[in-house]
Image 1 (cartoon, helix red, strand yellow):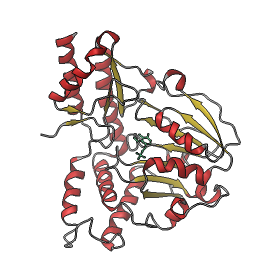
Image 2 (cartoon, helix red, strand yellow):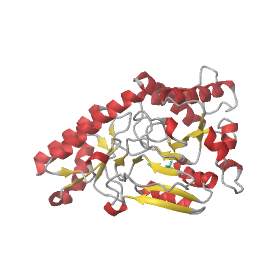
Image 3 (cartoon, helix red, strand yellow):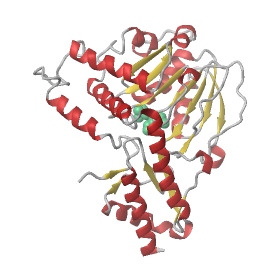
Amino acid sequence: MRKHIFNAGPCKLSDSLLKNSAEAVLELNGIGQSLIEVSHRSKDFQAVMDETVELMKEVLSIPEGYSVLFLGGGASLQFAMIPYNFMKSKAFYVNTGTWSSKAIKEAKLWGEVVEVSSKDKNFTYYPKGYEIPKDVDYVHVTSNNTIAGTESFEDLDVNVPLISDMSSDFLSRPVDVSKYAMIYGGAQKNLGPAGATFIIIKDDFLNKVVADRPIPSMLQYGIHVDKGSMYNTPPVFNIFAIRETLRWVKSMGGVTAMEKLAKDRADLLYNAIDESNMFESPINKEDRSRMNIVFVMKEQYKALEADFIAFAGERNCVGIKGHRSVGGFRASTYNASTIEDVQALVQAMKDFEAKNA
Ligand code: PMP
């Protein structure tokens, strides 16, 4: 039986991705070679790459003047590549938790970081209404905080280049790409298996704002754009799987449909948390993530947390243990999660509460 998977990434993926990728690993397009045997420079693989890039542009309504890349190294390598390429002297970072803190650490290697942060309340809210200095090279935000459980649903209007780490809410809502100089993330949540990084970068930004320092070839965005993500051997399996996700998202009604599903799933779970006498959400209501639903047990029930994880496991709900830095629970409800998955978890919460409260 397929479990109700609430893992934070790697995470639940669509059935069509699993089935079609498995078949392509056995044989691609009836050509007598596996997807992972065929040359990445063959016409069969080039067709996969081209369709994946086109689908990204279509599904996310990416305007003219942007390039789409699929590279290795994870979002974590982007934390380093961004300042390496684009930080001349100063950048602005919105610090909303573990991942943005890691991005800031890399940026500090190359210049001054001006920071606004929600650390004062343990990252349980998303900062708003701050001033951005005019002389920064770029602004960096993390749209969804996978560990802290906060999310911003806004595409900011700023008059400096805007960069967003969308690792964990990519494709879960329509995004006005024209407001961004760059959007990036690790694929292993809403887009596909772990091992590929997606990058959407504005050609104008790439061409004009490059820091004055020697940059190794593999770390230059310009080279990857010129070579169509094939400067070196790209993650071929992952790109195929990403294509399957994009085909699936399109067939389901696109990002608008994904947003509705995300709201329905999150409302169902947050309502159950808010109505419960045993569970509670520590997150500021308007900033609650639709993708990573963080909740805890009320003080008097804290000793029962491990018991609840075991109980949920018996109901086939897996992956709900909170991140070690936060504790409690985290149910990650990405695009491929269904209402039925969330209903199973809500039922487990209700039954556990009835038995133990
Ligand atoms: N940013 C965010 C928001 C993440 O959730 C993660 C991983 N969970 C990362 C960056 C790091 O991604 P990677 O493991 O692909 O380097």
